[in-house]
Amino acid sequence: MVYLQNSSMVIISSIVKPVRFARVWCCTHTPINQMQTAMEQLDPSKSKSYQVVLPHPHILHAKTSSIRMAGHSKLQVIADFDAALTKYWVNGHRGQTSHGRLQQGNPEYDAKRPELYDYYHPLEISPSIPIEEKAKLMEEWKTHALLIEGGLTYDAIKKSVADSLITFREGVVEFFQFLEARDIPVLIFSAGLADVIEEVLRQKLHRSFKNIKIVSNRMIFDEDGHLVSFKGYGKTIHVLNKNEHDLDMAGPLHDQLGDSDGLNEDSALVKKRTHVLLLGDHIGDLGMSDGLDYETRISVGFLNDNVEKSHDSYSKAFNMFT
Image (cartoon, rainbow, N blue to C red; front, top):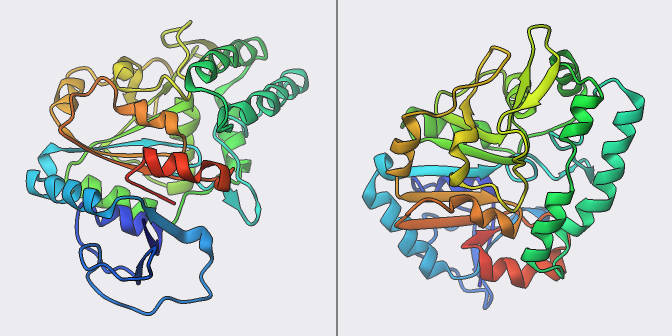
């Protein structure tokens, strides 16, 4: 077991290219050379919240070497959105999610969705509930009909995002820029809402990225901007079923209301990229690469809650986690 004291996004970026790390510690407090390019003194004032754990550093080193040798043309990045690309904790408080912050302007329906969240979210993150049982619970947790019945509009989405405190992790923008410059595709998988995520990217990052596709529950609006349906209505992407089998639900960042044509021919090209960097905050996120016949996969976990209870399971599931 090895522990790194550094920004998680800096260390993730190092998988694609070498960077300078802060001091690297293993469980015997012996620095390891394979995972560092410089030995610098650890700043004792840094919070443990920035600690990155490498359960099996030599396996990670071998996978990193394989990805670098294959080159950028064989790599794709698969990432969850809420609590992986965005912060789970903001100023000591639970950060907002793309789905949870949405206000549709109808008090009755705005109250119903948080009630469902308060019931189902603890079940979602519980380390004691088997995956199969969780999948059934996630199927029960459906709010799409409430959004349609409650009269959601695209203007309400824009206002909700503008008023939100959704915050990206440090280094995410630079990471996206690095990947875009090298034509490395990023598939953002989410159990949330694609249109909300797109609006978050627009408003919080103030730009779009040509290499990013959103695989999530995608809305269909009428000419007046009222929600009328969902793409693939009846098929809900939730935390335990989002994967590359759902590329038909994907779409690039777009500026127009209405349905998207999805990835089309791009999906075949994406599946030829057989080296994967996967980022997720839930063990179920490991399934995001299902449907892809990959050669090498490096999995990165963000352990945000139930830290002590989930440490062992994340150590077994992910190549590195923070």
